[in-house]
Image 1 (tube, chains in turn orange, red):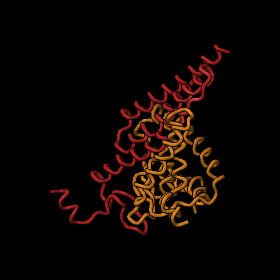
Image 2 (cartoon, helix red, strand yellow):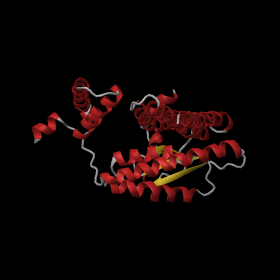
Image 3 (tube, chains in turn orange, green):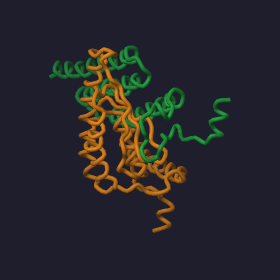
Image 4 (cartoon, chains in turn blue, yellow):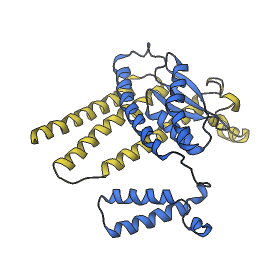
Length: 165
Length: 126
């Protein structure tokens, strides 16, 4: 087991990279499968110093729900931002910084949350606090910053907590 | 059927183009650096998404083969756009914000960009 762990430090990453390679080749052949697997083995092996522990996923099925929620929100976000850009004057817009205290602890979960915040309605994640206990988020138009914070916490963070922790 | 397909693909292309244009327009219209970040990170996502959907529909229905490249492009954009935005935001915080001009960082006192060793700050300003 330990030998296998040392040889394949991140089996899921290897699988993901192999599938990515096959999709990049855009076709199926034994050649590309073998080469994809070689890359999938080599890349985690070379970069293993940066992945000290294996990220754990508690509820894999929840990921599908999360992706659907995020995709829906991205479409809404686009229309919302387009509306603000086109029809709202700069004087009427109230940009704001919002602090989001984090309940998430694992770096992977926080990374996904920060990425999601950037892709969804009127918010860009700008920074993390010195010890990683809060996220700094910039809002394009937030008359009510508390509502934005509560929305992010209930809509994304609660779901990510179920998935990762 | 052919005409229906062409209309669908065109609709996606036009929607994609319009959102891409609005995203770029946002860069000009919005009036502070942090707000300008919102234009390219969002409006362009759907802009690109529209074009990719059109490309996918066309390759499946007209050329009768499934192309995975569009899925890969979507994935890579979703992974890289937040990181680019984050880098630009960090540069902005580094150069134009002070710990006082940002909201409270809670129990950690400082945001990571401001949490630098005093020596580094000295050489930075010199």
